[in-house]
Length: 343
Image (cartoon, rainbow, N blue to C red; front, side):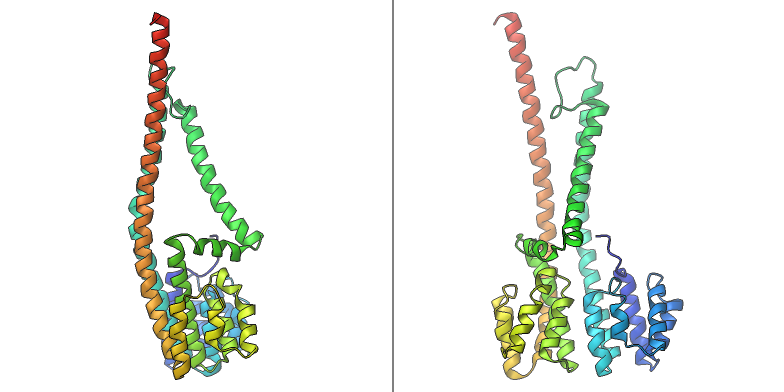
């Protein structure tokens, strides 16, 4: 939320342009300068600053760190090793393909979640309409919706819905950004059924892609592990960086290190062990990136279905509450009438 990162569509175009330009032999500083002039609009001022840094002789990795709030961790991690190994065109190709798949995932999720979201909004508006109608019915002094009726009742109801939504979003942002408890938040989210599995698959996909490129580019395992955990963009994984790197420096293998980290599934670590034993870590991690991306797509579809059912359940529960509320009010009217009649 409130992210200043480059929009996904612009980032894809940015990677594609840089891939074509560097692959054609254009210098990186010149390529960035062109992006600053004719690139995607959100990228232009950032690329212009990067071009000036590169023209002054700075490394791309260092320049990107100063623009960290605009570029995702995965982009920065892969560009760092690609610059050192001279494989920037290949790195931009991998990044373009990855972000394109992320875009497809996101669009599919939005497509699936749109109708449930519309249903929820319509349900809230219908309830507000009923509250308003109860207030304009002549001589209605009895029936209300949870004690609300009329224009004032509508204001209270909609104001409460808005306040709860704002407080929830603001609380999430403050917890992560102000209190610095992003790791605790992400650990909690990973434990939520359906949502947690989707977030884990996305993080493992980013981790695997980064490990594949970094190891193939000649990075040491401890450095590749540090950068790849940062590339997950998930604070629950990021906070495991220090203990994981310490284990590698202490002489543990990558398999042993990952097995001690609670966030990595045992089947994932078993496949990593196969690659480590055979000396095919880059190929194995690349395959794991593809598998987890497919898994994330599947879990995202399931998550959208579950979200739709939860909306239906929420609406049904609210309708049931309203029905019982009106029924009890009706019974009270009957009892009051019977008492007046002496029955």
